[in-house]
Length: 293
Image 1 (cartoon, rainbow, N blue to C red):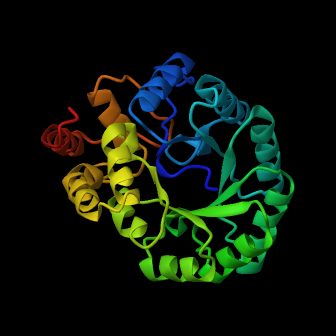
Image 2: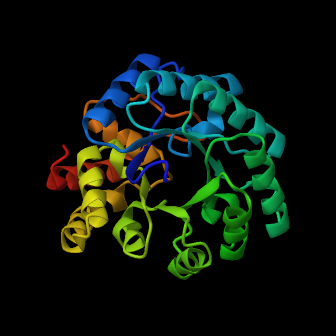
């Protein structure tokens, strides 16, 4: 059984003006997500600025998220690292806190071989007894988790159950589903949700959900219910907002968008910087036209 089906939000990590983590705001946006129908929370992923959180902050955000959500919907903890031992330790802690699963990105910078990926992910999964979702995002990591590798892991490691597919390569996604049809695949790109769900994906791990939780949930629900015409219409309607959520590197635009909505999730840590004014103006226009501003 999948950890979740539908729209999982890749949640931002709100900051105070002094760049400390704003835990009061974290609770507020978590409650908004649950009220908005979001199907799962993904804590400390790319959108959550995990790469600039300290080890203590990373684990604390995961723990507080799990405690606040309190089993109302699943929480998947981002525990990936380019160090296998670090990823194992993060994953063990997340399991101890009560995470429903972990999201583990492929090692970045050191760019493991496919054999190295198999050993990396297997070592992490075998250290815990909760579900593991692989995160394939070669644009950030420099390495693609090939369909044969994903299939080997899913077919041979019991608790590796899914993949967040953000490569944009539909041919590889189809091959993966053919090689291991039992896999829980999630779109990692908000502009490709319905397309991937039409070939068997279970939903999305979404940036868009931060600013449009109800719409993203309903789009996925329509696809899961087999109403592809409704889902397709909703995907197209969201396109301009989605495009403008990625005119600068994530999560710069989504934090700008949430601040435009009055959510006050604060600034970003360097090397991420405030969104350029011209881009923000176009984003605001798209949000108004979509009805979320």
